[in-house]
Image (cartoon, rainbow, N blue to C red; front, side, top):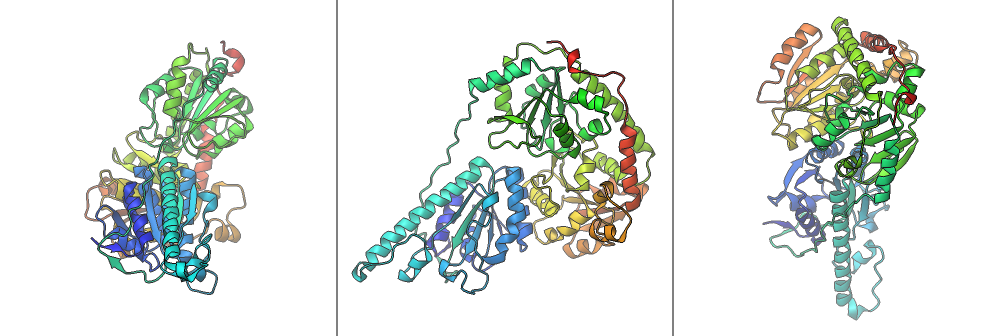
Length: 601
């Protein structure tokens, strides 16, 4: 077997293997050659070559998102590293274990005018769980000044002994730092950055390892819920007739069904879910915006919860965030082992546990249900709004809203649905999604910059299931380099809704149909995906009306020898009018006011 000659490269590759980090996404370069040699010559690792570092990082993020285990990205020195930043930030806020391995030059070559050098130490410090700058292997005394905190040689006759001792100290330091970083990614589920200096020669290889690094096992700390925390929760729960549970982004099948059934039986609880919550129950409330938008002040006061319980990732719905900030609950509990965001500016209890652990400890201790009309009333409102939703969809012209309705119904059972950001995820939120689908979206930072790359990474990690990317035109074009790799499975499908610009800006406040708006907000264009598909080897189809869309969808998901892309052209100046009138159509006044005074304990 072939190994890089540099001991530090051997150490890092060996420790990645010991932690089970199998998927390695490599962007070609020279300074990272020792790592590339190490990973690609060991059959344990599954290596991918992606030249664009921004795409490579999101591709790795898609793999890690699906497998829920660390995935590594490897790059050369210089600006290559900075292209990882959007994906690093997304991983940080979405709790995805991404391991950044950046090759660097020795410290004596930094800031002296050498090429491909920047200050790489701690470059992602604000958005990583752990960051470390490893020390250069010592070969002779010239390397001493390339490591911090290494004393200068004092006596010439002690040169060999001192160098040997210093190298042992450096090796020990590097091993501990690498173990710490990888364990953090494993246990805390987030991005870490390991910066690795290498000196030339970079391409030398050996047939036998020269190091056997120490493996420090990752140890999970128990997260027992304190009795006083449970008691406080129970006391608040027992006197609250209006309880709202709001679920953010969540992996499928994470919450035990018995707890969901128990929550659904309580008339004092309404459970609001989003497309990315991956939770389904007939007694819950998907499509939040259908319920929230257009409520009167009286209705909002009736909906205002006494207790708000949240778990999962970040919330998509802007309407529910505005509502809960203006009509704050008396108590907001967030259940998460890692962190709690004060999204609604009233957080008063961070329960450091998994939702299953909390519900298992909490729900059996509830002795009686609080009498309340809270859920039954809002189920009635939900039913009426759903009827209005269906009636409206039937009668609208061909538009984004019509397209999302038909496309979401067309996706085959048991598929993975990756949704692009901006308009795409907001339209998806308006529909009840097939419960057999797994739904994902990069909502950590909500950027459009890596949606396609993430979806492809997902498709590679989950070739057992077809992956469908539903995205807008700007998001797709922005990340078109995502198609520049040889790893896209033939069962991968892309649906691009092309409304010739940033359609979401047409439904936001501001002056429309001006040259300034068209140029700087909506970003008008006449580009299509056709030639990109030809260049990268994807089957391309396009439609611009409902009949053609229905016809195309019948064969779009069929097996093929290459990935497929369907581009749907919609009329941009019709879309915003249809959507705004949709919310006007949903408005209604419930027959009866529901107030907390009605409920009895």
